[in-house]
Image (tube, rainbow, N blue to C red; front, side, top):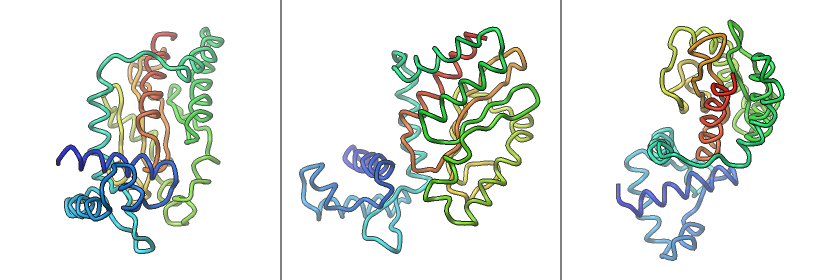
Length: 234
């Protein structure tokens, strides 16, 4: 993929996250200061390779799971470098520190903070149970107004706790996009979780579940920093 194609794919993903509508060539042409014909040519190549697709209701394009995976891999490589903790992560740390002597309350507080900051569903393993918060956020997303998609997401949630115990994802940050999810593959959801050591287990998890359309850079950074911070506090 060329640098310009990567830039166009990135723009489509980030704009789609903001506006929840397909992104057209005219918008991108203004952004990149080139002709619409040039953008359409590049979009055609991206579509040919499966990174974007055209919904039947619009001339604009939206990312595919493959496009999101390419983008997330780019972000993962960038986030491997040390970064300063941002204001949002410090706000989570302040809330969690108030419960430093109670691991269960600290973890719940961290999840509730992620819910507020990401507008996704938040989740964490606390011993043998899965704590969930922000269910209303998840099912208010336009992607999950469809009954079938909602059922697939619910099935994913029903099976998430036993799957985490069995699979124990071992990366500090794990991102499962759309069909990569172990259950509910066709739900259009993304699971972003961080593994951390807690008094309950060396394989405790905290993270969020939301639509594939989201601000990956910010959410991945917050989840990663929250997991690391919980491990330090607990």
